[in-house]
Image (cartoon, rainbow, N blue to C red):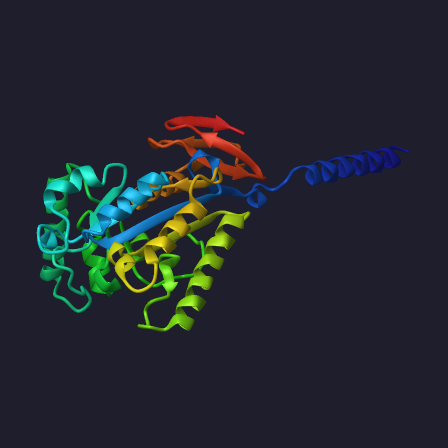
Length: 308
């Protein structure tokens, strides 16, 4: 009789344990995912190189559509023919980001370490003097870099560096010092002179990617790069640029950002402190961070601890 009672108790206990284990979801299967600022699922970066006088028209157009840009400038070319003046830089780029593009625009790959340091530091120092802001990002001139370049700029206060190697996707780069953009401003249209068929093909490819971005239902970053002076070439390129702006502007699902601001935000997300069971999250940064846990959105205010 006692034996029967013990076996019964054992079976009941075992069933209870199994039932409890089935009701508890392992914390390793709970996904914590980043959302962009304001809890948005899409973000847009627009970056332009060189500091051509055509930036004046481009900035005016961007301001009309409430878009933000990152402008990579060559400080030693400012105040020369076809380039912006140093005097106008601070006021022209209000609301946008100013970034390093080297002092003289040489290809950095293959250069000596001291020459790389000169090109980056001189540009950064002069742009900080002109703008009154710290400068922490850059774009590689001609997209040219190698291991020595990446190693060198990492010690010069540069926190991201954009290449020209288009990914044709919406992924966030893991290494900010080798930041591959999504696509050139018109794809590869106009790269071949007087080739209307190629231009049409590339423009269709560009707009298809933009359409995919707008329709994306997962986390998506569209990073479009180029040069304002390209809009002065064959065809109605300023029309194409404005048409692109119309497509992406004033969309409630898109977060419009400069490159350095997004870097700061992503770093804030990556530095969140999360408990083992994913129910306690600490945010020690100065940014409100937005996350998604089990398909539910949460805001973790700057400097706060929340329980979910």
